[in-house]
Amino acid sequence: MFTEERARWLYSHYRWLEEHLPPRDDKAPRVLIAPTPQYYPMRNTRDHAFASAVFDQTRAWLGLSTWPCRLVPRRDDHEEEQAALRRAGLFGESRSHGAAGTFQAAEEVEITYATTLLNDPVGLVATLAHELCHYLLAHVATEPPAGWDELEPLTDLTAVVEGFGIFLANSSFSFGQWTDTSHQGWQARTQGYLNTAELGFALAVFCTRNGTPPELPAKFLKPNPRQVFVDSLDYIADLER
Image (cartoon, rainbow, N blue to C red; front, top):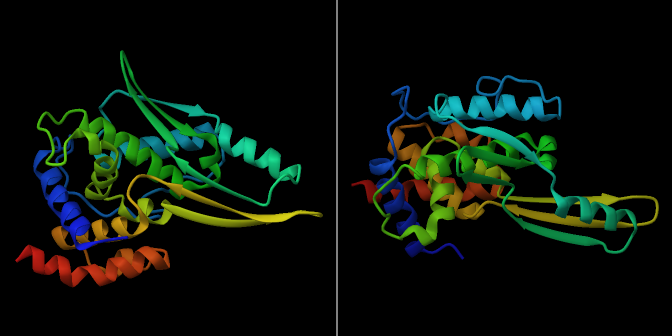
């Protein structure tokens, strides 16, 4: 359930992130990144070269092009297991939730992504933005009001602050049906750590704080996050006063 308490948590931590995130290398203001060729012009070749191009473009929009890190593909064992079981007709439904990528900072910063995301460019961008925002937060010395135990939700929120709210909101939940000659069923997947309503609200904060016309994200959002986004605008305007 999305409560007023949670809304205020998101708003206060959004403002905290604005103050404490490291400055961008390019000094450019934050812009809302949309799923259009203007922001991601590359053709999806469904291979690592495509993922690398998306990664480099996402780093550029985040102002992190000069920050050293490498991208590594990772087989999604859960998805492969579910597909095998589905082909065998052993069940008719599946659910999955969890990280579609990882961030590791030892001798070298390494970001991984699930190769199944090559078929889901919006989810790929959301995942890479989230993992790169881990990199940003690793350079924040001040502890957030919620403490570092809330690192993953704060990382999702950071990605919204940095302009990737449309991608996170649209990839936070997906539902698909499948069928073959003898079986049929459905699969539901959640991705990320803030839910669809929370991301719709956070995106409304972004638009309010950056003077972004709400019509711009509204035309790209799926129905559920769009409804929360629109309903939140007046409430956030009151918080800003």
